Amino acid sequence: MQQSLLRFDTGFLVAILGFALLSGIGTMVQARPLVKISGSSTVFPITEAVSEDFQAAKKGAIMVTAGIAGTGGGFKKFCRDEVDIVNASRPILSSEMEQCRQNGVQYIEMPIAFDALTVVVNPGNDWIKSMTVAELKKIWEPAAQEKILNWNQVNPAWPNARIKLFGAGADSGTFDYFTEAVVGKAKSSRGDFTASEDDNVLVQGVASDLNALGFFGFAYYIENHKKLKAVAIDNGSGGILPSMLTVQNGSYQPLSRPLFIYVNARSAGKPEVREFVIFYMQHAQQLVEEVRYFPLKKEFYDFNLKHLQNKTLGTVFGGEAGMGISIEDLYKRERVQ
Image (tube, rainbow, N blue to C red; front, side, top):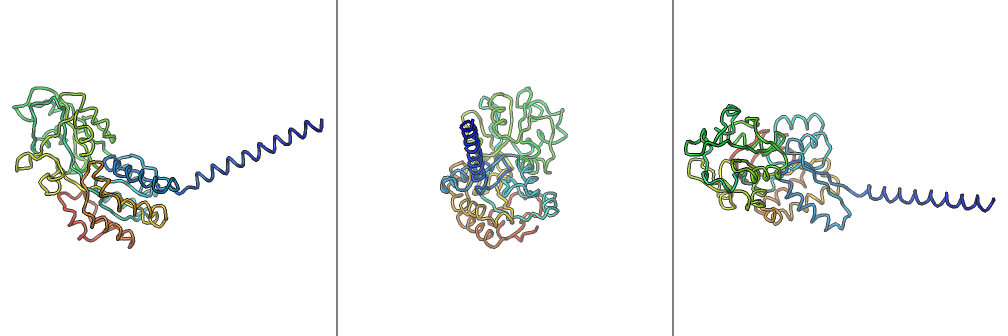
């Protein structure tokens, strides 16, 4: 009987020790420093590439989680102090600035790349090579809802076939930027289209419908260029296709735009966040190009590092989307919070 009790007691003790050991391991894993990121699907491929290289360089000592919520959804989390960094395909807006103020969240604004917001059609579409900004507005403005339904209503030379529209969701910075650039007011759009913050959904939608038209970031177009056709944009000087050259020389307008990360100023004091941002700026030029966006000059990434070091707070955009601004102009402007 004593022997049985001893076996039971010993087994119980081993179980308790095992549980304590496993709990300790779990605590150790949880205790690993963590950098939390959310926001734009457009910026996600850049931050994902940086995150993978950074975690490899740190041999897993620092974890990075990067989610997609759209720029608007990302700023909601950021201004609630839920994430350290937000990916943004447009600048922070006045309403988001106010939300951050109310919650005591301060931020460092960092341009990281340029994007050519790309209008695409199905490759079987043989009637469109270029579109004017006026034609795009006629399709996408609020007054077009349930009225402008067929291609020939936009241009009589185009077929009498129903347009199937795909575009960024309302929480997307791409949606904000596109509507401001094309319609003239952010978030001003018809509502009868397939909307998603996931650009892959939009890619598949356009690729599978002859009469489809959509828009999203350049990287998603390039990645899927065999099943999509980019539309040249005519802003008064003839149709211009998106490319490194047309973005850098400023001729691809009004759909060329800067991309950003915003760093929570309090989080910037954490070693793991600081290390990640430094790594980001040191490697962004190469990685931005690898994922098919347009990198900035090295001096601008160095400016970002200087802003990190000095905790230069606020935004140079004053709460607006900011159309047609060169990267050089951004670093000359005064920042507001």
